[in-house]
Structure formats: C-alpha cells, structure tokens
Length: 255
Image (tube, rainbow, N blue to C red; front, side):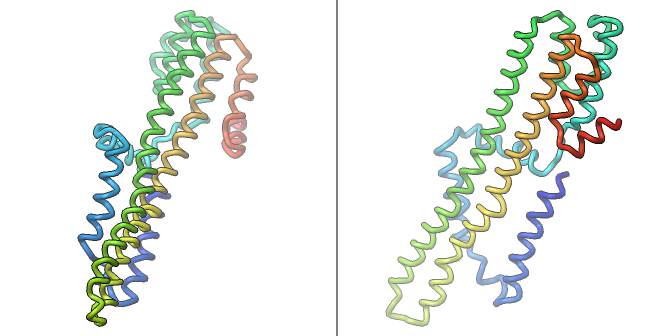
C-alpha cells in the first residue's frame, strides 16, 4: 500500500475534522442535499464527458493510487545485464529458457522477439507502440479524476447560488438569514474538499505513477535492443543506469 497517499488523505481529513470539532461542532457541516448536489452533479458531468464504461472502470484505477506495484528499476537492469552476459557467451538462442522465466511481461515480450531473430527496427516499433497505448490508458484515468476535480467545485458554487436564492426569499425574517447563509456555503465547502483533497491529488498520483512506468519501459526497450546489438554487459549497465535516479543508480552500480 502507498503510505503517502493514505497518510495525506488521513492527515488532511483529520485537520479538517479537528477544526470543525473545536468550533461549533460537526452538525452544522452535515447537509445531505448539499453533498448530493456536489457529488451527484460532478458524477453527472463526468458521465457526459466520458463513456459509462470508462467512468465505471475508475474503481480499478483508484487501486493504482493506493497500492504501490512499481517495478524495481535496479532489478530490471540486473536481469538485462545477466541476459546480455549469457547471450554474448553462448548466443541468443541460449537464453530462450531464461526468457520464459522473466516476470515482467514487457521485458519478456521484447526478449522473445530478440530470441526469434526479429529485426531491431521492428522490435522498437512494437514495444514503443505498446508503451504508447499503455500511457493512453493511464491518461484516461487521470482525465476522469481531473474532471471530477473540476466539476466538484463548480457544483459547489451552483449549490451555493441555489441556497442564496432560497435565503433571499426569507429576508422578511432576519433570524433565518444566518442559518440560510451557512447552508448555502456548505456546498462550496464540500466541492473544495473533494476536489483538493481527493480528486485532483489522485489524478496527480496517477500521472506520477504513469511517468515512472514510462521511464522503466523506455529503459527496457534500450536494454533489449542493446542485447540484440551484442553490446558489452558493462556498457549496457552504464547506459541503463542513466534512466534511474542518482540514489538508485549508485546502488545499482555498487551491486
């Protein structure tokens, strides 16, 4: 599980609830119609923008924000270097059995094409196409959460306007103006919290995950082609280490 995501949401909600409870209590912040306007309106607008299947599939996308299944770049480099050593010593066909044991599907696909004698240009084309479509699928999840984050504050304002209209019809009773104003502003509060503590941060986390995965896959493409070209294992390790952050790069080189 990604502790950063969980801690961020828990701390953010905790600070909000603490501030509410130290004031006049949580009762005045609970207003079901306002919540329905914000969440229901944001969901309705998102459905207008995307296909029903895409919006329903967002549940699976949320998992990527809360559960970390990132590939270890150092381990991938170690695998590629090991395969390159055996390929230089015994030939490409000798690593056929090792390729079947590779856990990373993207790397396994590339090495299978190498063993089959596929041309380097075709290998790069196939792998880059797969990478491109993977990023497009990731981008869809980001766009959906960005849409939620955009529409939630907007419907918060709509709810506030509706509350103000209702409040203005009661100006003949000054005692009801304060309570009416508070209820009118709750929808804005709901929209701001949902957008800035949930929807937009999750979209940002998904983008970061997608960017990290793209770097690893680009590194794999270069590693696969380096084995195809018969480059020296040390050269391959130095080349692929450049795809990693400096801290991981040092650890990999020492390993």
